[in-house]
Length: 228
Figure 1 (tube, helix red, strand yellow):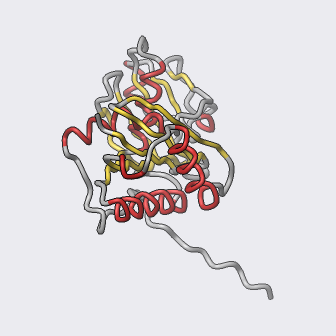
Figure 2 (tube, helix red, strand yellow):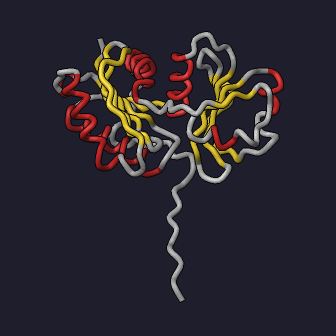
Figure 3 (cartoon, helix red, strand yellow):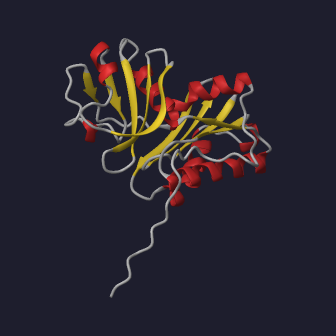
């Protein structure tokens, strides 16, 4: 049985879970602005205490690799890599949007439509990907500016549920009877459990020294305007 510590920090949710054999046995998460730096290691300690498990008993560390917040991903991945180095454990990196879609599918097994996971990238841009009810990728991850013509082909043929913190802002733009919008949070490390177990059994591990998050877009540092 694989015992995997799981970290999700791609959005404003800071989430840590522990799974055994693909089932979540402990979870600690909270959604707040700029929470990751001060809370992530505390959440990890709490989850390990909840499960009464020693760090040495872990088989792997899994992390949500993005896309998402540059700062959140950097903190989550650097923490995961630090644990891997310290404990000599393998690193599993999983797509954030796929994790979100998996959470929706697990909660709605009867829904046979498409699911579109979205992470807010400011203004009308989102990081997004589309999956079917078996978690097969229908549309690859991309940064997309949403307008009234977005997803026309998919929506003319299928019901599609939009999830994530980037979805609800698109509700007034994507007016279609086949479009459903959920104002629920699917950025939970608990939704990594099944995917992390599959990756562990397949030996799908990252090179800890060289792995970087999937930022999707380059981070741009803007300089404050000088006062005249």
